[in-house]
Image 1 (tube, one colour):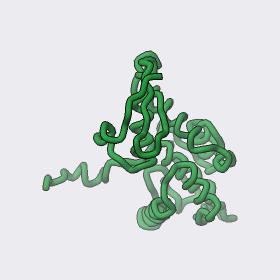
Image 2 (cartoon, helix red, strand yellow):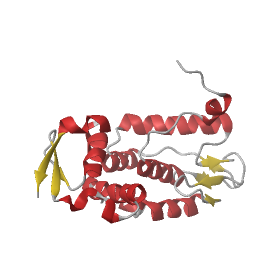
Image 3 (cartoon, helix red, strand yellow):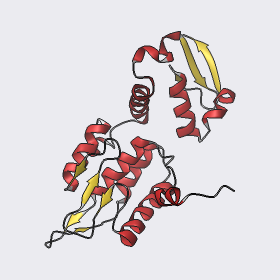
Image 4 (tube, one colour):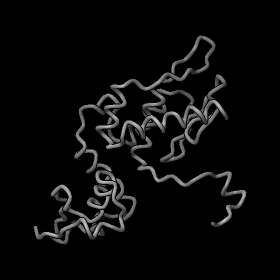
Length: 199
């Protein structure tokens, strides 16, 4: 096994989280913070209804959501901060956007900012379908990956069908995302589970 350098050890593990899922979890977590009369913030737990909405919306299991929340709470108790929230024990907490590195002093301004990245509000979470979210995630990732829509493989006239559930997608990228998120398959396995169809 390869030895980690001190810098790598301090940095921690690389995240395999879907960035959109993290923004949703971080926004929901921030929405549970309550300010005390002394100006400090108290952590309240996410209710079962919020957890179910996150679960339906992201496809994450309740266990995964619970583990993420427990890990955040542990980090906050142990060090007073996480990658997205610093100085929780002081009256001057600092919320950090993992998407653009903006900084905020209040949970409400942080949540509003994350909602602008997500393209919907936390209140809309329960109303949105998984299909709509998948399309938003795919278009965001394609914008970042390809730079311009002309470079995506959507103009080839090919449709990609998932052999596991028969859903169809207009790009290789979309079906790879679907296989990872919905079926837990690695992107390397996509050839086994994808059938190409002509439009």
